[in-house]
Length: 506
Image (cartoon, rainbow, N blue to C red; front, side):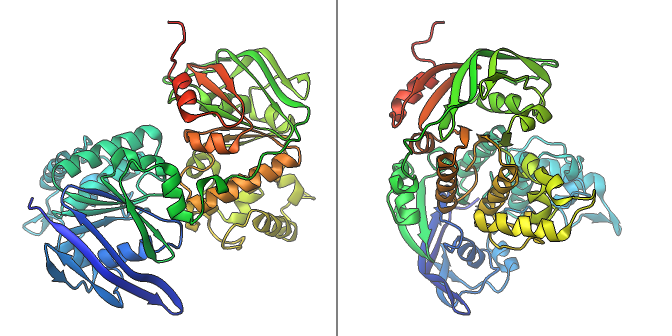
């Protein structure tokens, strides 16, 4: 694989009255992971459309190793060694991996499809991309992370020297994302130049060599990957990081949830599942309480078992809701106790992607729109339109398919769905994962507004700046136990030190 240096110089593009790109300069070198950040509408997708040959620029030039290129189609970009992996993967679930890798370029012998030869060649291509999967597996049987790896192998099969990855971890679990990062690192070390588009600031320090931020169709800054998150946020939104978080309220009411030395006993143990084994905490009306801890600390398990989601069992120790002992452990009991839950996987368990916004939104309050056992479309539409306005879901079309919304708007639909039942306690697991900074700020404002109306919030997040800026207090978990409580505005270093178990007895 030969070294290369790709440059985009003075790229301009208008769509009618919209000035999508305003003279953008961008480049990526061989072996470099150049992360491109920007909110929805910043111009990232249009710029990558130009680079991948899908969009013709109005002005500007693309150079590869100093030589000008003119792409009339994505085929021209492929021929130049540039491949793009879109967020919505272009794989065919009904075919096996080999069939997908050679789709449109099938191997034949005497006019007959050479299936065995394709599978052997596909196995070599997978190995070349650092992917250990059987090429005969149907894509429909693969997890999302595995499909992402197949898409990388497919791009590299055309000898791509520049790889564009658009939000590759948006639908991945933490473990799948870790595997993807290791593959990206390996490709970089082999000389592939990678343009990595993401909304997740926490990914930057893990994979980037450089970071460029776009806003309103222009590049507003390029930084080193270890730049403070506050610097990146200011570039993204044009205002200080601290301005993302609304002021805390002084109105803290009566306890909603109280746990004292509470532990969950699962009926069927799950491998890798850190059940709560000694949890003490209280969430009051009007209070936002954060859960911090390293991966495996048990934050997700605490929230899911409180809601009765993911595993069956029962609690022992003190578990009180509004001062009364409550037998949580299944979803019906949690809903009756006024508890709602937003999972960390909106695409997998939070939403039904192929259903409409309306169908998803009223899912938790069907009785409200079925007065005589049948869905009243008029009632449904009235409830949904109100929710879309309250949560600023765009577009405000109840009939739109959820799968076609941006990540931030999908998350707003999840919030609307859960909060239509008027809960007293909201459990949140990674509530801003995969959404841009602007949408994060909207979510923070909405949570604080709901807290001021008396809602209690228990939120787990792997982003310490988020917990520090948002929460009234932060509780650190380690190995299924709550080990320390911090008041407002603790330092990241103090939380990190406790999270990693420093000072704990062996």
